Amino acid sequence: MKMTRDRWTAILMLLPSVVLLGVFVYGFIGQTAWTSLTDWGRVPAQALAVDPVIQYVGWQNYRDLFTGFIDVRFRQDLVNTFFFTIFFLAGCLGIGLALAFLLDQDVAGEGFFRTLFLFPMSLSFVVTGTVWRWMLQPRGGLNVLPTTVGLEPLEFRWLTDRTQIWRFDWNALPSMTGLLVAVVLAWVAIAAWRDKRRTRAGVALLSAATVGLWSLTWARDVALLPYPELHGFNLAFIGIIMAAVWQMSGYTMALYLAGLRGIPGELREAARVDGANEVQLYRHVILPLLQPITLSAMIILGHISLKIFDLIFAMAGADNATTDVPALLMYLTAFRANQFSKGAAIAMVLLVLVAAVIVPYLWTSLRGETKR
Image 1 (cartoon, rainbow, N blue to C red):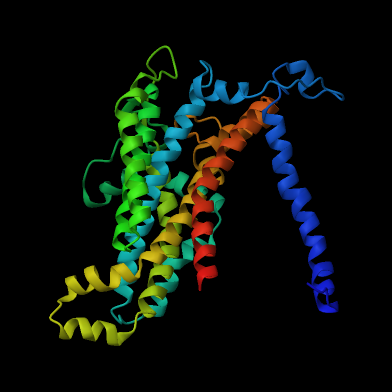
Image 2 (cartoon, rainbow, N blue to C red):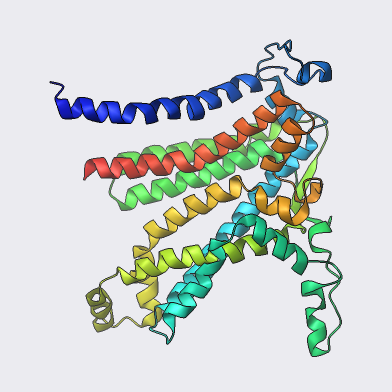
């Protein structure tokens, strides 16, 4: 292919950005990955030395995080992130969709309400966390709200509650992960079958059956620890989830409202002419058309929840273990304890989790654009 002057101009214009991106993004990711495979910081005297002696230890840091005796906090942090993500997504999508449906009914003052619901998103998580920390004080805020109507105040401890529910043994993680993968593969098989992609559906179904069988048999014999280690959902996260949903539900409302306004009115009228009532209209016509928006919102919100740091730091502080998450533990491990290699390993685990959410979505989107 002949290189024209315009092509050379485009390459020269993009080259500085590509170089900076390669150095300050992918270069630092590579440096972090290498650090996670060393023992930098395991010996306190070597952590901040001018010329530290760093040795390659392979996957030892990752083995310690997932199976080490002293890293139980990291494993609980992963469980905290899982539950936080589930409830955060459900709350934002549910409330955002409900608000979008209400505003789509041509209510009076729609612009005012739209701005009102979207306003929390303009705040930073630090501001939101500070305000909600005041509201969730054990002796004030929401706990004393019932007294305004003559009721007794609440006694919920909010951010300091240490009660756990839905506990499970960490040794069951391989089996549970396999079952989750099997469910996802089964869903892919059903979607492929509906699209008349029989080969893909067959492969996905066979893979789901294989993974499911492995999860119910051999995976149960895999013991990550020589003793049971119980983890569960900390009730202290309820207040944090409330604050996060309050801030981001307006964002999903805006997405859904834009999607609703993009549905042609003729399509709704045709469904009504065919005898569909309002419930059937939303169930069989509108909601299926909003699926791409739901997927996009889930990807963005999931990305936020996996990296959540500032909201929890502002609401509960850095040393409240009951509300800890991997991003916060990474900060404490690397910049307080000076265990740089273990902090880098936590960072790489977070990167893999975020990539597991983002990469499939980007691959599907780019593949669809290529086909068009």
